[in-house]
Amino acid sequence: MTEAPRSQFLSLHLLETLVAVLPVRDENGQPKSLVYGGAERHMITSQARRRAERVYARNRANAGLGPLGGRSMGIRTREWALLAARELESAHGWEREEAVATARAVIEASGLKFGDPSKKTVANLTKVLIFAPADAGSRIAGHIAGNAEELRAWRDGYLLVQTEALRKSRRTARKKSDAGPPPEEESATTAEPAATRPPPLPKATRDAVLLAIAPRDAVDIALYGRFLAEIADSPNVDGAVQSGHAFTVHEAEQIDDFYAAADDAKLDRKRNALSFLDAADDAGAGMTGYQSLISGTFYRHAVLDRTQLRVNLRIAGMTEDEAEEAAADAEKEFVNGFVEAFPEAKKNSTASTGSLPALVLAFEGERPYNYAAAFQLPVDESPESAGGEGPAGPAAVRRLLRHHAFVSRRRDDLRTSRVLTYDPRIDALLHEPELSASATVVERTEDLTP
Image 1 (tube, rainbow, N blue to C red):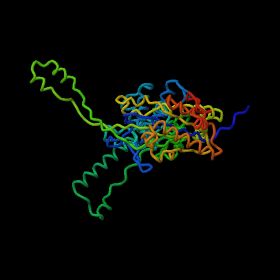
Image 2 (tube, rainbow, N blue to C red):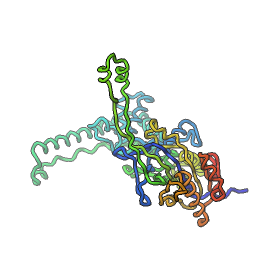
Image 3 (cartoon, helix red, strand yellow):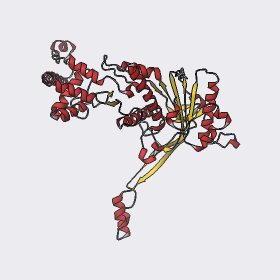
Image 4 (cartoon, rainbow, N blue to C red):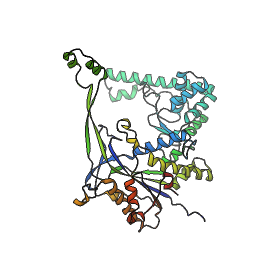
């Protein structure tokens, strides 16, 4: 029996209940929120979710675990010059200072901008994060070491011109500061000649740098995409994953938790004090403050574009068979990360990363399907006897599956619907006749896709 052709899009929908957590914050340390259906909802941004899923998959692959175990993955960082310099030191015996200066000059001359050279904290960091294969630093270092004589001579000329240009700009700034702005006619006749252009980077070296930071076979770049505007001839990648912001299915409720942190040394002195006056000197907490925490049942959604994923892998240089195998493995790990990964903010003080979803719904279609509309009307958690829907978790499951059943009757392309739960109460709901017809119940994450 031949297998039915798979649809282009895999839609994932998830409901999870979180209690007293703060997985993402705004610039003021407050929970993020949105207004939907006339009610304020707590929100966990898609950026926080995507990073958690991407790092989860990368760590597993690097450890040889999961479907992507041992495959090439990417790193998003501003430290590519430092990573290349570290490789020059450890593998090729270069001195630290020379290694950093050379790696920075080579990468900068390839088209990437760096921070202010007068500020040590950012001087050797690119201005933007670069998402590139994890071995890009070692590849750049290998090329530099293999062409050391030529690149050392080029580097010295490049840095000499850079240093002279910096001196001229500082002298000009000092003159303007001391004398004020000159008349327009005078400035036109006394302007200093333009600085000598730095020597161009050898074409073979620039090509080596662009190849090193190109997406190549890094599976997570094919999944999540990347945008690099600074170098026009370095390929961008349209991501194969779409992610929506998670939001509570009910109105938001925030807790401002007052905390007091103890000072162990003070408490030890107080415990061993010989008089009540000595004890009074060490009374009180070591530090106090407030932290905002949120609770609620969240709906979140993501989509995998299978066609785009395979296109990205083929463009990266894989054969059709290699791309097919890598895409199948990437899909399994993507689904696994969607279920298992969680943003790690406040993880130690809230144990948020131990949460398991109440429900995961997965199905295929010829276009993406977002079921956020099922929760436009906030869930009313008052008792059913009082006209409400009861606890948000079970109520949201009923709404989501009823919504899916309703849409499925009107859309011929929806198929292979599967649901997974880690909540025994929800499991009982899934076997009710009204809800069981909408999807097949599975017991493992890997069974959510065909």
